[in-house]
Structures are given as C-alpha cells and as structure tokens.
Image (cartoon, rainbow over all chains, first blue to last red; front, side, top):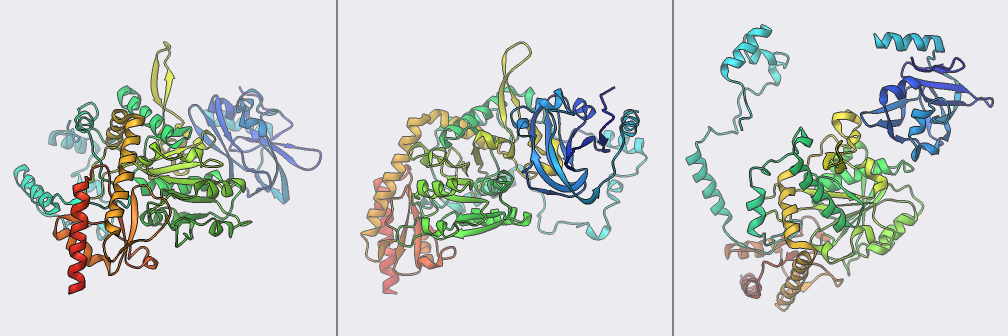
Amino acid sequence: MSHIPSDLKYTKTHEWLRQLPDGQLEVGITDHAQEQLGDLVFVEVPEAGRTLAVGEAYAVVESVKAASDVYSPLAGVITAVNGALKDSPELINQDPFGQGWLVRIKPASGAAGELMSADDYARLIVAEGE
Amino acid sequence: MAFIPHTPEDVAQMLATIGVASLEQLFDEIPAGLAIGSLSGVPEALNEMQIGRLMGERAQLDGRALCFIGAGAYEHHIPAAVWAIATRGEYYSAYTPYQAEASQGTLQTIYEFQTMIASLAGLAVANASLYDGASAFAESCLMAVRMNRKSRSKRILAARSVHPHYRRVARATAGHQGLKLEELAYDARSGRTSLAALAAHDGEDITAVAIQHPNFFGVLEDVDALASWARARGIPVIGIVNPTSLALIKPPGEWAGGADIAVGEGQPLGVPLASGGPYFGFMATRMEHVRQMPGRIVGRTLDAQGHPGFTLTLQAREQHIRRGKATSNICTNQGLAVTAATIYMSLMGPRGLARVAAACHARTHELAAALTRLNGVSAVFDAPYFHECVLRLDRPVAPVLAALASRGIQGGFDLAAEYPELGHALSVCATETKTAADIERYAAALADALRAARAA
C-alpha cells in the first residue's frame, strides 16, 4: 500500500493538495500515482503566473512507459513552480509529497473543487485496484 | 508479402462466429446517405500489360525536357548505386516497421540519416523525416508554439521570400489551430528580407520568426542579422534550408544566436523529380526542444548484454502514447526516400556534397550571365544567390515558357501569380547536371522566343 499522509487533501485524478500558512496551496501527484507511472524521466512544468481553471491540464509527467497530464484541482493562479524537477524528475518518485511538489497555487475565491480526505482516497485506490 | 491474409473461408468463419451475415453488415452504422456507392471517377481495373502500356505513354508525354526549373525541387545527378541499394528487399518499404526494434537495420539507417541531417543543420538532434518540405515547415510552426510558452499570440512572422507553397501549406495545416502567419517584406533591390521589416515588430508578442536561406528567389538572406534580432528578444527562429547548400554555407545552428529549428525539403538528396513526389521533409532542433519535436526519433543504446542496438526513443511525444495531445497526429516519415538520401549522402560525403553545391552555384551564375546578355532580359536582384536567380523579361513570361517547352526546354518558374509585384519575373536554376552546351542551347532558344514574340 502506498503512503497517504493524513494531513493532505486528494483528487480522483491522484493529485494531492497541502494548505500553506499564507493561504496558498501546494500541489503534487501522489505516491500511488508515481508508483503507477514508474521511473519519471521528464516533467513539463507550466509558467508561473498562469491562471488555471478546475480540471485544466497544466503539467505533464513522463515516465519510461507513459506520459500523463496533471490536472488542476482548483481554480487559481500559479505562484511558484518547482524548478528542480527540470533536471531531477526523480524527486517525484523519491519524495512525492515533499521535494516532488509541482506548483503552488493561489486559489481564486470560492474555488475549491471536489476534494477527498486521506481515508476516502485510500478507499478509491483500493476500489480502482479491484 | 500479401497484405490481405484472409481467405474467403477465413472471412466466412469469422462472420459466422460473430453472427453477422456479410461484411457489408459490419458497416451498417454508416448512414446510407453518406455512402458513395460507386466511384465514378475511377476507371475499370487494368491488367499488368495494359497498365504498363498506359504508364509508358503517359511518361512519354513528359518527354525528356532540359529542365531549368528549381523553385523547391531540383534535378541532381543520382549515382546508380543509390536506388540499386535502396530497392533491395531489406530496405524496400515506405514505413518504419510497426515492430520497429525487430528491424535493427532499418533503425540503424534512420539513425545514420538523423545524424547526417543534424550535422548538416548544425543542430543537436533530427527526426526520422516528415512528409515533405512544406509539411515540415507547417510542423515547425506548430512546434514553435509549443516551445514558446511565454508567447500567447501564436503569431509567426514568415518572410515573403519563404516558398509560397510552404506558407500556404502551413496556413492550411496550422491555421485551423489558431496560428497566424504574417509576412515580412523583402527589399526590392536585394531580394533579401529586410531587418527593418522585422524590427518594426519590436516589443510585440511574436511566437516565432521563419526565414528561408537561400530564399525562394535563390538569394542568400542576411541570416545573422535576422536571427540575432529574434534570439535577442527570446523569439525562436525557424530556418528553412536547402540540404545541398548546407555543404557550403553556414548551417542554421551557426546563424548568429543560432536557429531553434531547421526544416527543409530532402528531395535534392538522391530523390528523382517525379511529378512532385514522393519527396521527404527533414527537421532538426536543439536538444532543449526535443520533446516538442514531432515525428519518430531513433536512438542508439545498449541491450541487456551490453551490445549496441537501436531503438525508437522519446516516444511519449507520439500519438500511440499521447493520442490527441501528441506533438503531431498527421506527421509521417518517408522511409524509402530517406533510405535513398542516406545512401546518397554516404556516397557523396561532405566533400562530394560541397562539390555538387559549388557546381550548381557556378552553373547558375553562367546561366544568368548568358541569359542577361540577351536583349530584354535583366537580373531582378543584386544580392548574392546560390543556385537560383530571378530574371525579368520585357514581356509576359507564360508565352515565352510555352515557346521554350515546344523546343524541349523547361525554362523556369513563372513568378507572376505568386509575386505580381515583380512584373514579368522568371526564376531559373541550373544544377550540376547542366553543361555549357545546355546553357548555350537555352540562351539561343530564349533569344529566338523573345525575337519571335517581338515580331508578332
């Protein structure tokens, strides 16, 4: 079973969100997602300043066997991008909830999409595996 | 090899298994109104003897004219070994095989091709080829939009001296994806794209700048000034180039600031003129942009036992993985033409190709000198040119070309439709295949044609 920190929120498309003290949200892909993808070889990150709609594809993670879009869990503006991923995409494999973060988003007011708790996300993974 | 492996018994058995009465029934979902029924424009089938005769008669209509047309397709000497080798059974297929890695020889050929193209272009990486030069340019415009994510405008500034057919294909292909191709004017005296035309766009959101060198007129552009202006502003540069010329002139990768993408028509490299095709396009880029490049890429690697081998690589860009978000869903490579080009380039070598280029340059200058000595013929531009030159006649070009054709001479490309601003302008080309006697014959025929036209 992959690691699912209880203090984060999750999406059906296997992204996680961390509430930061300043009101922004840090976003990445889950441990389960990176396990499914395998060794990442490239991450295409967006430009800071880009405005996102809920469900918009804004990044691409490419492994030796697949390439997947990463979808925005909420509407907002990208305030920061993890530049380290350009040269070290493996950070997502090694530390998906920490050094493997993708972007920070300043949410638009009332922007929250449909988010899950860690328990709900754990049940989703089990259900998808069946 | 049979491409329809099913016998009528196989088909009947499969239909019985799924409980369908006929093959036609499988297409019931298509509304009857959309079905064509019969193909009225397609004649009855012919047997081998009949088709052989028909094609022979058609070929005779083309004759064996002395060709002085360039304008994107060039008659070069092709060593007999090129097609003798390319048509061997091991090579004679138009496509990369679907089980690519099972065909190591094919992959190695493509790998060598990519290496040669990258080296000619002065750029790090090339793909396995594209459909033709025009579609390669269209793909380069789409690629530039993906590369330049700071730009929101999707505006590509393409010099008016870029091949008009290429610009039209780019509009047809990329226009539907929101791309706007805007023209950069050329200088009327030199035929070069003027830096002033480019500089007029300073401060605007430009997605890419496209320059052809030598340009459609044959003129050598001031690529260093144009490329460095664009690169200094973070605007990607697309260079459209003739592969023969690259043996002599500075490749796109070495233009001041360096082009980001080089594309062009590969036909001059061992592919014969044949009513417009099949030809092939090529594309090279910097390594930093490789994930935005369309088309297949073959890489060299080591297998589990440590032996070198070849494999398709960076496939996450491609449609079988990325589907609708692939870098291209319409690109195709031209395996057979590329095989011929690879053999051609390896037989020529860098020095051989440079000799071809130098001979073309010299022949075209001799041609231009011989023709401009005639009454009523003058050069349009004063800038240096490679192996094409634009001449102005003192009367409409089309009837003159028709008179030359009746004497077995294809006299050039009439620019009236594409460049009406040039007046009675004619683009001519002489490659290494033309002799001094050929040039004399053309000059004499043109003198006669003009004299006759004046008298009429």
